[in-house]
Image 1 (cartoon, rainbow over the protein chains, first blue to last red):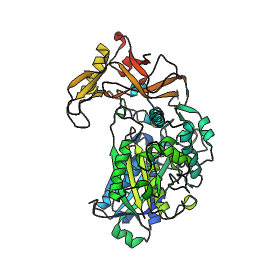
Image 2 (image 1 turned 120 degrees about the horizontal axis):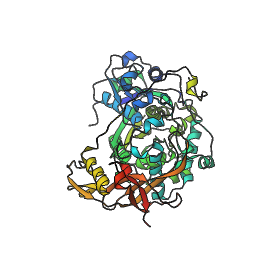
Image 3 (image 1 turned 60 degrees about the vertical axis):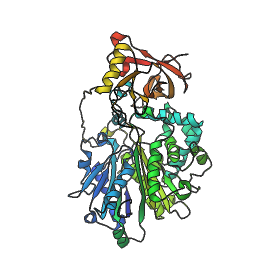
Image 4 (image 1 turned 180 degrees about the horizontal axis):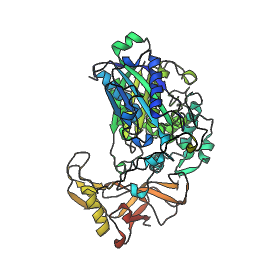
Length: 388
Length: 157
């Protein structure tokens, strides 16, 4: 019932993530796309459709960013769609690619995600100030960090979580990123470093937050028939879920992301997963802030509500733990070029399941992995389940 | 190619551009009621959904859950509780603010939802989740039908 065709990922590509890259957004899209095609042993002419994901037009500074980037993403004279669901875009883009192929309309789809945040001058934070309701919220002088501080504080208050419980996520992810060749902020830091970093909006401190970045990522998706012809090692998209909550974020409790649970349940149902912590071998939940990794582990039903900090303290979420979380280094370590960061997580699951993650490879024989992204005004969840 | 070592982007070969555009936003059907009451009567209104039996704050023209059209406006009072808060210490440029600013999500007993606003007449160390607060309005002659017609919320005890 979930689509006519099973869909496989057969190639992945990822550029460096950096605060500022010389390449234009088109060039970043090209580099990631070319890498993914090369990895799959395919040519652009083999791609029957293209899906591009990229976040607000205001970052690149072009008010038709999808069309502007199209040629770099290989879309010249092809069926082409740009998708955009805020921070959820990076994981939603391969979901859109999935239905292109699962529907039977196409046998292949090039999935590309791009973000060039450094074009926004002097700082991409300015683009974020116009995401709020223009009448109710913008006159108060809102900025992005403050609203996440409100959510983080509510989460801490509800479960009695301390800052040091959350800081461990930043320590782990920045440490993991030391092994990622594309990473922007891999570092060996301590819980004390996080607690002593500059306070931005209590309880958010500098080292709780991922950096802004430029970067690109891409995947090659094909139908089961094509996959069997070209590779012995396909990775299947077995679960797809997405959900949006109220734009009036004041109408939610904020301590728990219901919309992520809704998206996860949709993906688990499709993948036939009944017991997520047992059946999922590794996960890449969205971690633009350290508390979000914990928040999302709970929303993804990988643990009970309020239990994620305890699992983190016990080492369960380390690469050699029972449930490795963000073995890539996540957004906190690899960097956060919004749409590309989400797709980077799907690339990581792809490489981990194929045993191609190099120094980051988790032990054992991972068969099932999950990536999730989150966005808009703390309201959007996108979830993908991959299997080998 | 990483340009991370160049801290001032004006030092790289570049082109400066902008996407200048200004906007005039209408308040909308529900917003008109909400801001008119704030300006003229110093009242905070919600909209009642007869089907879901809840009062939605701030009011909307429709219920997003059941899609009923909302036409009953309800005064939810000016008192609420702090659901969560933050103490902002830097601005959007990363510069230190002269004074820290407390922003809170204030929920109302008689309505579902709430308002984001500043908290005033208190110290940053004294603010707590669960604290009772009430809206402090600007004098009526200064009100412009804006969310800033409410100066801030202050603790009631």
